[in-house]
Length: 276
Image (tube, rainbow, N blue to C red; front, side, top):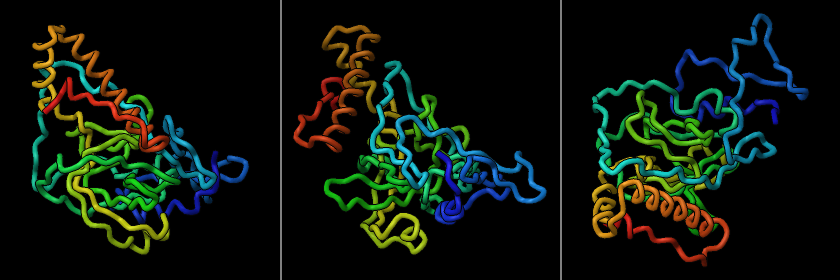
């Protein structure tokens, strides 16, 4: 589905600073043909990416993503997470919204500078995409829009899902798919949206989060408990990983079902494997 992208400029205004050398996103006429200005070549613009797996494209052309499957999070019981070097002036390697994805996103409001050290493990919330705008999914119908931390970027993961990643290369934190529970750190009290964000996404409240990372990105949080489970059960490492992965995937799906379809469903408890 390709429609005229007159609102594309609003996306870039609402997002954090873009790189000056980015190519413009292609525009199309009603027949799907490229619209080129005099003297321009096809190579001078960027065609939108394929629609991510599991996304729904609205009539506006923007995407809605309310849930995503959890990829099996565990691979080995001795794996450690080694953070990348932290510098006062981190070098950015990618824009927050790549041009090939900007066609689908109305706004990606983001802090203009790093916040310094933050507590990644403060809270977990699910961030969803509705008609091109990102919301923190809470109980009730009054979800706030999300203001993202500096350094967060959109990406497409190895299986084709839209995910939050890092603007730095190489990624120092694991990506987490849009529609899955993420570590959001501490977030602000809801506040009024800026005029630009309200114009793009409606007059909703906004909350700022300090991080958007994968809860399973730190193996040292889970592996000691998984090894203790193996000592109690007598399972071999491969069995432990297989069973813990199966439980984690079922738990994530049940959380999505409770959030979107039936809040009366019983939650699935995987603390047998990684109880803290």
